[in-house]
Length: 262
Image (cartoon, rainbow, N blue to C red; front, side):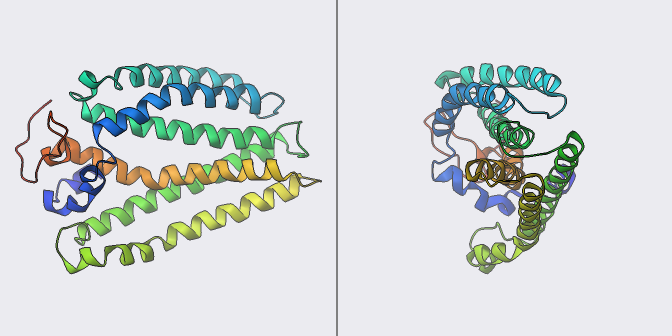
C-alpha cells in the first residue's frame, strides 16, 4: 500500500485535509481526545476483564488480560505525555498515531465485551468454548475483509482522482462514495445476520440488554476497521507532506509547503 501511495501526488490527497482544515483533527482537539482516553481506557479495561469476563467460559482470558493490560498501560502513558501542549505540538505525527491506537483499543475492548458476555453464566446463553472460538474466527475474518475491501476501495478512489480539488469528480465524490460502500455494507449486514442467528441458537430466553451489548461490540469493531484505512492514509500524508501538519500557531500549513523533519 505504501509503494502504491508513493505513486500519487500531494494534490491527489487534497480532500483528506478537510478534517484538518476544519479543526476537527487539529493537535489541540486531538490532545483533548487523548486526555479523555487517559480515563476512558482504564475504565473500559475494567469493564471488559472484571465485569464482562467475571463468569465467562471464554478461553485464554488470563493471557488476553495480561497482554492487553500492558498495551493499555503503554497507551495511557503515551496519552499523558501527548496531551501536554509543548509535547504534542512538536510530535503531531506521534499524536495522530496514538489516536489510531487508542481508537482501535477501545473498539477491541467493546468487541471482547461482546465475546465475554456470550460465554457468561449471568445471561441466558448456552455457548460452548468451541462455538465461541468459531464465532470469534468468523467475526475476525469478516473484520479483515472489511479492512481489506475498504483499503482497496480507498486506493481506487484516490487513483481515480476523487480526492482532488476543484474537479467534477470532487463535486460528486460523496455520491460516488456511497455507491462504493455497497460491498462493505453487504459484509457488515451479513455479519449482523450471523450474530443474530448465533445468539438465537445459544439462547433459550431473550435478554434485550445482552442482545444490544453483544451486537454493538462487533459493529463498533467493524466501524473502527472501516475508518482505519483513511486514518492510516492521513498519517502517511503527515509524514510525506508538510501541508498535513500545523505550524506553531496552530494553523494548517498550505499546500506545497516544503518538507521539514520534526
